[in-house]
Length: 206
Image 1 (cartoon, one colour):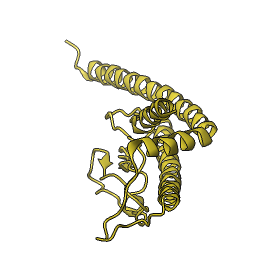
Image 2 (tube, rainbow, N blue to C red):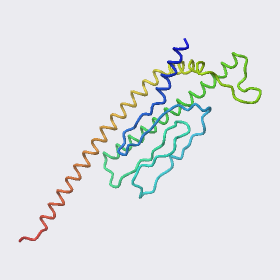
Image 3 (tube, rainbow, N blue to C red):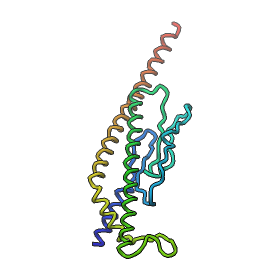
Image 4 (cartoon, helix red, strand yellow):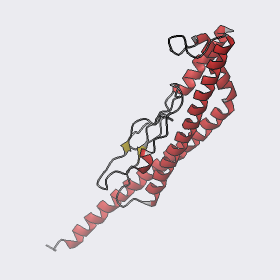
């Protein structure tokens, strides 16, 4: 029983602590992991309102959000942005917001259920949440493994649906990135040919 619970705990940690990567021309990474430090802090809305200077030429990546533990990204809007580039930027931003919302809700649920589990286990032992010195009591890793297994089993379908949607979005983003790159290359070649042709036409006859 203890060995099975420990294996479940290892599976849970492997599932949640893995950092999924969101394709980006600048290799920006979005990492997700559960928050287990107690009740969630008030949500930070800075990333939603911050906008870099118009002269900025790079994506801006902020500190990890206290709820989702994901780093918010403000994507650079290039000058003369094409329709294809705009679609890619919007999809990446929408995917980031979707990912943030999922892990925010997941981490809040995890923290609340973990707290309830700890309190119930201590109560069953006739103990309060804090000892005589005011220090918070904890459970053993074997006892917490039971909670991790239960939480993973209860959310298995939800996690599977998240993974399917995550891969679907990443596949679409990757295709759009390829199209943007090919379009940019073709535009560069066309402009060079046009420039070369203009120079030849403007050269005086010998």
